[in-house]
Image 1 (spheres, rainbow, N blue to C red):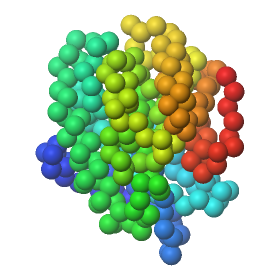
Image 2: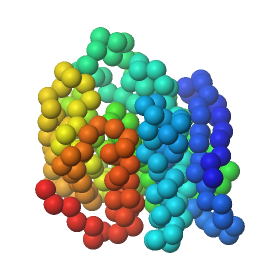
Image 3: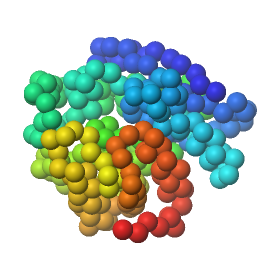
Amino acid sequence: MLEYYRLYLPKSKREVKIEVSVPRNRDNVTFDTIYFLDGQNAFKDSHASFGRSLRAAKILGLAAKEMGKRILGVAIYNSESDLGRINEYSPFKIINVASNEWKKQDLKVCKNYCDDFINTIIPFIEKKYKTYNSYSHRAIFGSSLAAITAVYMSFLYPDSFKYVASFSTPVFLYSKEFYSFLDKNKKEDRKIFLYVGKEEQSDDIYDKFIYYNSSLELYNYFKKNHINTRLCIDPKGVHNEETWGNHIQDFINYMYYDDILYTL
């Protein structure tokens, strides 16, 4: 079942919508948590920005039934407007802009949002529900621009998220600054799951293979720096929620087991 909240974020000075997927049978259950960025796209097609969600609640149900893993899904809605989302999910100045609107980017918005996420959103959820209140039982999922934010928060805040699903990660928007950040904040106790589709493209100005090549580069960086990482490549994958949703189960498998193999 889905439960809904509005929560005021003191640093961001605005309300955020939160949608939580909770199994009906929750008695005497302590949950792991997965936080979904772009939360309106997580559970219900009728809420999704483009009419198709990840349908992640079904996957969480399968994890409980088939794997015995009880996971609370927490979806945090984004700012909805294009520039609002750019500001919220970009901790670095975008160099490779897709439109002039992006040049109005305000880095303070993302910094404040991340602070609110760690110090307001997570405590709210962990007070409301019976969860393991430890980074080792928390995961975060982000796709496209939100994938950057997911990696950023996990590495910036030591006690935030052990497990990171970084789907279609656009490192090419600010490659130099992103890798400089990782160099200063490397943490070998994380488990990173990277996904990319070979057919995906978001904005026409970018090279057709830019997501694929960028993801390979990021994967090699993590492996070189001894960070536990898997890369899943979908040969026919495109840049949308339907494709990403097909691989959430792969991420959950990787959270709990190390023997999931992916070949290039």
